[in-house]
Image (tube, rainbow, N blue to C red):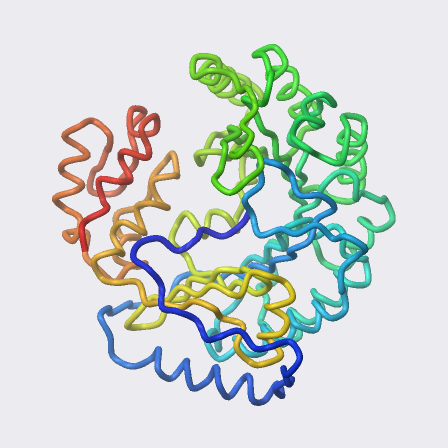
Length: 430
């Protein structure tokens, strides 16, 4: 799962990109000193007064894949002729070292290694990455450590080594068990490889997620039902079920395939609700379904407006300080990212979230949760009182999109159906 991108007004421009031929690696001490100066600036009096800081997660982005899928708008690049594993791991460690002053004393509760296809990393590479993370950061003893993996990269011994290194949760990009649909999606695996990947995962992991897509090119309701049944038969603790959308700047956006119409898509969604509930899965977030106690802790931290430090090419961060909340984005292109890390400046964009934006940013995330959130969480995570969004709450409640009482705020069934409209009600003009 890629972290939520910054929203709202434009971000501050980043520093100019260092020329490749003249880049000189800065020392780790110089990186840390620079970040420490920045941290001191973040601690100055500001617009907020947070009584406590939220839980902190770590996101690590791996930007390479075997082949770019035509629907994918993530920061991923085809690894033609391989990729510089050791150089990238060096950059990740230096990036993390430089960011440490921003998170001094804060424990990491979850780690998510996303991409791209992180399962292209060697077993030794994952072992080194997790060793570096443990060396530099205080990991919670029960930390959830997830890695994304795609069928076509599964080797039994390699995944056993991943588990031995400390990965305790896999997120497997199945997308479909139907070979015809996988070919239409540009995936590198077929249905048999998808099933084999799950078997390998089951042999070493007791906690894993399956990603599945529906409303695929030429997909019938019967085929969608068969895909979901195949996924449920694998008994994954967690399911992520995504409606295929044509994202801007993708191949499918330029050459759109024929997709099921709105009525067929709605029928698929209804089928998913019934089948997952019958199989004992709780629909706890827009696209997420879990067995009891198996929700994704990392993703829940996003939806509850927690903090996350993102390292790696194109990674995003959201970090809270006593008097402000900051967003950062690192350089996207892997080569530029590694050059900028060497120069001591991996952050391309940075900005402080304005007081007037916080209500929308919080609700944009928290309203994705089917059971909503506790009223006090709004003040804890934003530093504002709930009165800051009182007018918007009243309007949403009057339209039947929102339920609230003294304890919780959550979208109604109607609000879930028109979630975008509900979220937009909290977007106020700056």
